[in-house]
Length: 412
Image 1 (spheres, rainbow, N blue to C red):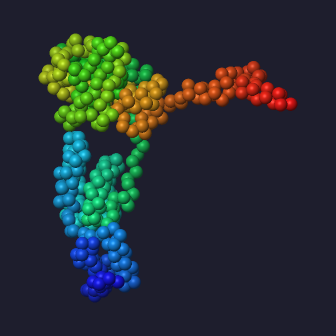
Image 2: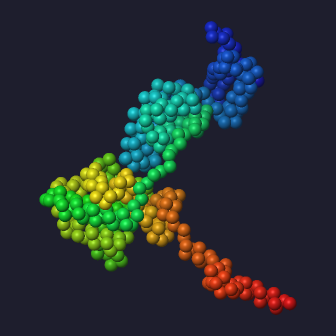
Image 3: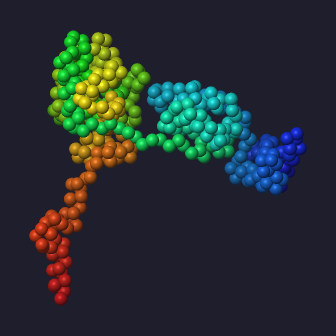
């Protein structure tokens, strides 16, 4: 054992406590309390732990843990990490909300090295009891893991406890996907609401109808639709009508698309292009820098809550009683039906603005797309164009079997 390194037995009022003393990689003396005999610590176990510490000093350059409080470290992380990573303003705002309302009130006065798996588990359990959804709690734990990962790299803690915790199980996602016939019924219901409206309300309902048609025809996200300006809608392009997603609105403010893949061009079908052309001829805010869908009186950002109320009226009129999120489920409906219509996975991924194909795969699975053309091409390669059905119907052999039979006969 090297000089200065030893196990210390301390006889206190609450029994025997075992401690370590050694020097870290910087030569600073470290005194560390392991625990009491009542917790299972013994001289033999303490000496084994000391040998492990000295190995860590030599192999990993273990340094003394500074008693940093979580609040101070978390605020430092919040002031540097988002900017260094170039995170969106809305993402930063979300992180700040989680810190201030949840993580700091719980972990703020605790030293980093005292945050263990048991404390994190108690936090998750308390949040579940308070009514937070499992998905929300997991977002909290994801952020806590990011912060403590930096503490681990700085050798302020020995292990990230979040990785040792069993996460709350998130329920299977339930989306309301409208069938093509239901989409037609909802649009017809919108048209009836327009006819029943008067004055400004009629104009608003007409715009709401076009919003519904546009989301169904393009699959854009809520923020992408709110941030769409006329300069990025190209209805007279010789190559075909399209719109370009370059700006979004999040939390009432301008922002960039969700990811690099989110900045994209979406081809428009004739129906959506015609609806947008007529909408521009009706609106008072038709300048290139104006929002395509906006507040009918001010030209400001569209009131998405008012649109949600109008959509609920149309859904009720169309006799669709399933709960439907106005933009989220409408986007899912568009992408899922695009998959069912036969769009290739690559085209579907580009149109949806997904960064990861696994997300696109969810829509393909939901669509029930069986890739029948691909299956038929495989059968044609294996058994020839006659296929299995014709083979049994005609009582004959497939081209492959005929070739093999001929080869055998030649060899006889």
